[in-house]
Image 1 (cartoon, each protein chain N blue to C red):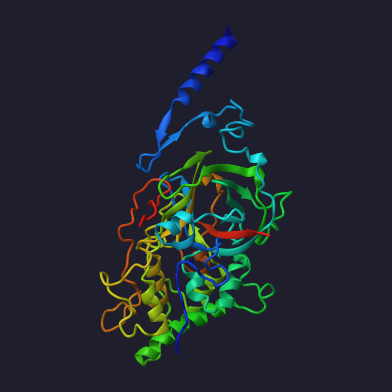
Image 2: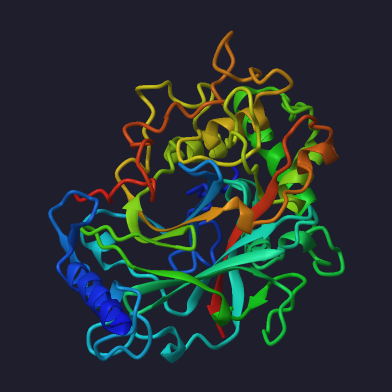
Length: 229
Length: 237
């Protein structure tokens, strides 16, 4: 029996309909910033990118809206959204915006459709290039957009062998023999750092619902890419 | 006199800002001009504060952000759709679904993500079992989640949990599911949850077992000490 898995994880090229397009999310990170009162959100896109011309030529699509979603009530519906979208050489950031706002076309329930919260401009940053780094700060938030080294690490070729049964009986290679497929590859990255005070109170950790106790209160967060219709 | 003094002060501030230059912080020698467009006042031929005119970026009001945008990709925890989606149809459906609606049989009458994920999880075990000539099934993992519960968490609650004002990590030996850092070995953690069994060491390469709980690679030489934006410059060649 063979399981056809052509895995370029974590979310790198995960489904046929988005693989190779500018909506394709490669990875998503969320962690405490250097300032412990802040949370950092990172979305990486369009990965993996070969170094050199492929990376230099990679651009964010002006028709693709990137949204960081924050559920702070525990129902896995977003309560707050941070949006990022490119115009020319600038990445514009909006929010954190409450989803139920008048005069917008988002449905406010599932969050599958959105319009830009143009009244909630949070900041903007010149998009970095392969040899120039630009960051910006406004109202305690920090912003970045541009190419970065891919921080995802995985011996994905060996995983494919395991999934197809050809790596038996050894399984994965030991440290030193295994190969990190992503070691020298790049991604397009959007980084936004947000004071926790802008994210509301965190709900009880979802782990409690499946018997994993003692976990701290935590937001449920995810990232989506949306294309202009 | 008072008005005159204020003007003088403003002029002095503006003049000093005009001549400020600062290096960007990637130490590659580039110099960014800090000019009229960042002085916090509307001056020159600016159409607003630090925007518009010949030198500055366009004012926000003049940029077209209209339109309706529809979801095409979504991601919460690492490697969920890629590892468990199985078929192309399931993966595509997962990506256009709202996180809160994946368990809704009215929204998705043709696909049950949890069941698809559980079948994929068992299939991984079957593939390896066949290769070894034994019958293998998933075993309740170190979080004490059986196959159905584990895949329900993955399929129907696919978000990262991130704890404010607490240690954030996917798993660091002590804390679990409080965030995802750039250096977290999410693949090894996922493999342990998939193949590690109740103690995390079911298939760890010891005692004649195959190595299925670590892919043998770590973060390597990627720098985890950088200030914002926390990630290294792209690899050049």
